[in-house]
Image (cartoon, rainbow, N blue to C red; front, side, top):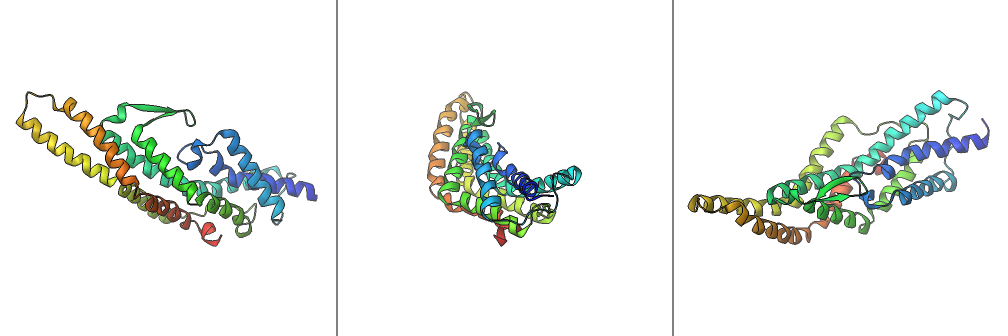
Length: 254
């Protein structure tokens, strides 16, 4: 296998490792980035990792299609670990915000997200925007991209494999959703208190349609409490992502 073939193989394997993070459209801070920009960033990161850093050339090449395909699948599995590090915190925040939408009654007023081709409720969109802003302002995107490029020296190309043990995954899953609930807990508790007051009022005044009377109050309280709680949310959101990064051995080594 000549040097040119080895370099092409290294480029394909590195791109397979980085692609899940950049190209998975849902539940990542890169959701709001246009697809063309994500592809350009993917190509740029791959060229930097392979061409500039001078990584060791893989032992598998294009002249061995079966081995090359197996290596690409292994690199994709390792890339999914990197993708989980940004997908789980975003999914945890989205789940907590969806609970708020159901409590407040604004779940019916959904917005269409052209990036993911799905509808999102108002509170979920606000929380995910806040998470995206914190992700980039805290420099976590640089930490993620730096860990991805440095992982090539820790796990050589062609030897990629799933680096996340099931026990580690379950521990990270529980901690991520717990922190996500902590961010939205003030809003949930405030809406629960309003529900208790509404329930007491409905027993006192059964002739009044309490649901339609309380709906504007709950919507206003939702966004007031959400605005107040998001002021203290950035440290917890950053902790969400950093905890997910630290769960990956390749990120700790980077």
